[in-house]
Amino acid sequence: DIVMTQTPLSLSVTPGQPASISCKSSQSLLFSDGKTYLHWFLQKSGQPPQLLIYEVSSRFSGVPDRFSGSGSGTDFTLKISRVEAEDVGFYYCMQSRQPPWTFGQGTKVEIK
Amino acid sequence: EVHLVESGGGLVQPGGSLRLSCVASGFTFSSYWVNWVRQAPGKGLEWVALIKEDGSEKYYVDSVKGRFTISRDNAKNSLYLQMNSLRAEDTAVYYCARGRLQHWGQGTLVTVSS
Image (cartoon, rainbow over all chains, first blue to last red; front, side, top):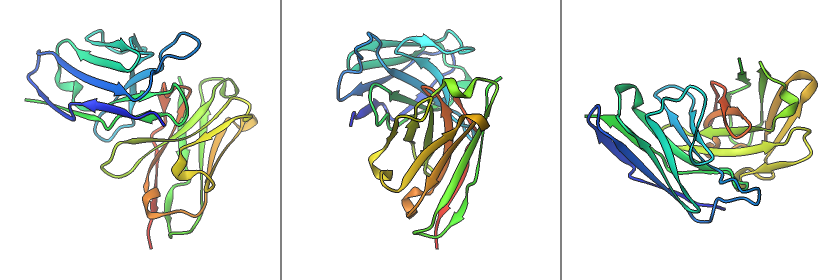
C-alpha cells in the first residue's frame, strides 16, 4: 500500500498570513496516463470533507484561488496564500494512483 | 446539483451485520465509479471500497476484505455496503463519495458495541 505522510500535523496561522502543508508518498503517484493522482481535501467541523485540489494542482469548482497545489512524483505541497478564518479545519492529502486509496494523517489548521 | 444520501447506519453488536445504502441524484450515476470512505470518532479518513461504473471491478482496504461487500444498482441510482462480522474498530461515520471523491454525502454513523 502507498503510505501518505503529512507535515506538520498542526498549524496555527495569523489571518492574512500564508500557510503550507507538505505531503509525501511512499511511491510515485505518476500514472501511466501521465496524470499524478494526488488530491487535497478540507474537512470543516461537523461536515464531510470537501475536495480542494485534484491531480496535484487543479482547483475544484468554487475553490478560492488562495489555495494552490504543487509537486511531483512523491513530494507535494498545499499552499494557502492568505489564510482566512473560514479556512480552519483538517486538511488531508490522498492518493488515488492505485487501490487501496490512502489518506495522509491530516493537518489541523487553526487561527491564532 | 449532485446529491448523495447515505442511510442504514445504527447500533449493532460485535459479529453482527448491517447494510448501508447511498442514493444518488443530480448526475448520471451509471457513468461514475463510487466509493465508501469512513471516519472513526476523532480520527482521520480511511478509504474503504470502490466499485466501477458497471460493477465489474471492486476494490477494498485490507481491513474489510472478506467481511464487507460493495455493490450497486444503477437502475435505482444506489450504492450499497454489506458489512458482516462487524468489529468495534468498524465504528465510524461512513460516507459515500463519487469518482475521485469530488462529491460526498453527509454520512451515516455505524456503532459496533455490545
